[in-house]
Image 1 (tube, rainbow, N blue to C red):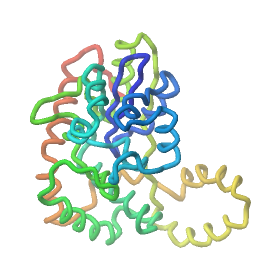
Image 2 (tube, rainbow, N blue to C red):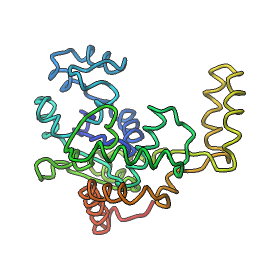
Image 3 (cartoon, rainbow, N blue to C red):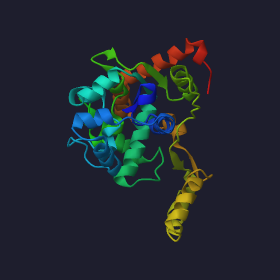
Length: 286
């Protein structure tokens, strides 16, 4: 959750939903209010900010900077009463995404983060195997905040509580224009937004090049590698992984589980898209 005092806005940062790009835009335009979090923890704002920026534990054994931004509504309400009251008194905003694409993206990130598989393709067998393992872990769970699985939370747990919608504005991830218009209506500021970054995967023919290229890159100073990295990832060697998520079959069991577990998320997305179709002022395509 991100609070912007200047415009009385709470942004619900649902993982794998483009929250990082919108967060950067909000921070650069309006700043952030850490006071409610710090008060709930009995810390000063400086103490909270230091712990957050350094990746330390944040007042609870299950919370650190790696998952603090993505805590679900039930957890905020139970453990952060001042934060919760601040949230209820603010305008609130969230982005939603196709749940299967989001699940797929979360698997790709998880394999890179915990298994070192940073050059996998969506159709690699390890992706299907990991999907089944994740489905087994999720089976029977409600809202959760586990650091190693936070990207697989349900979107509904950031938007509804006890069956009631508590977030004011919900927009599809693919409609940054509508978010920009809503922010303009709320703040009188024109804040152009663009889609967030897409996960990149190596093209099939290029995979043999990756190990030699990685070896060669280590011959150069770190600052040059950092400059070259975005150019390399956006070169013709790589492609947009998300374009192929829909064409890759995760297996009968995994596909059935994903459809059932995230059914409410699919409903929220459909409702957000329908709301835009019924609102002429925001019904432009990206």
